[in-house]
Image (tube, rainbow, N blue to C red):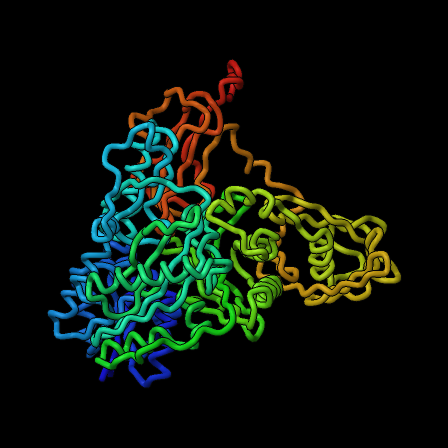
Length: 623
């Protein structure tokens, strides 16, 4: 029997595994980097062991240090979670060689399937060799890992070299393995996967299907079980192929076989020899705890002959700290508060007040709704996300809510091209016009009726806010009757609640403030100074860091004085396990270059200046 379990991972998945261990009476051990010293998973474990450093290569990818930590903490088993070393056969061997129980398939099974190239060959498929014009479009893909890391679509041959280099660097950083390959890119198919569970006695359960077609930048955003509208014949074929893949490598434990379905045909993609991020939807539908089942299988218990019968429908949405108004740049800062209504499962690696750093994945949480029907599950999850309390950096919440309510999704007709067709409309700013006024009135609560020192009683009070990347200005007045605003009746206003009435319709706003960050219901505002700082203006063509991170690459041969073209990639930053490309905003001359590989940067730091061709420096003075 397992007595003490070390989780060789961090964040949300570590917390999720600890929760099951607590239910089963198993003691827990966390490992943490210096950046995670006070992280939720570190606090939740019974014992925590430090891995010195912050970079994954120095900490969570160091299998030798993790095995030492397990032995030092008295653990008798290791669960790899997902990501990092979860699909590394050498790590699995090291765990077993140390006399510890490994929660997962054998190293040989991992070796056969963890590399997507080897997995394809096992299923009778071959990656592309030399790519020609006739092969386009192709997908450059990391051979190890997942989560959209190390993936690039290539539509022109002259883009292939940069795509290969970028994918290799990103994969090496995220998984410690820079191997990549190319395969045909099938557009607008459906990403369908089958969850499997196998014991050491020869039983393999195919636990239904999941649809993971809603992906942005190859990263899953919304997943559900079962896959809607799938013909029964095709469903049977997918389950049969998944069992065949598992039996081909004598698989043990939880795993996932992924397919791309197009034109009624299933195309094998890969087998993930680990738990998936989206496993909660399968748990909800089948009434299982997959982590508990993993532990029972590792202890030698046999599965029943047949899996439990599925019931209802479950949908999961991934909440990311990223700003759609800034090209989805990952966001850092403090997560002041995160809560969803009762009845919706929330898996997270953050507690209220925790910092969101730059070193790891920007996923804040997963929200999961289960209901008797798909329509009910969709409605429940959309409503829960819309009313959730999310006080912290900008997130993709609005994208999730709008996606769940989009007619193409509600009718079950989505595919992997969904965001390619609809992303602009789904992310078009739609700020609540009354939110800034509510924020201003809440801020004014308790102030003198004569307002700030810049104003006199007869003048409007003025407040400026940024919402969804746009600046807005609101005005209100102090009168003998109280606070007023044109066209709006102020029913009530205090520091936490504002009630406004427009054309007889009354609305209530909950207002919370943390410094310059103001949250009005679900809307996030940034309070701006009334008079902008004139020194904050940058020269035209200035390229600044959109996020904290590390400069990992500067375009080959790039020097000051070089001529660049519009859209030319100049600098690559790495933040939250992904690379972000900074390109020339216009054709012109590179007049200044401050970035160099290895440099740590903060948001707003000037990296380079491209002087557009149509702007000439002033003679005899400052350009």
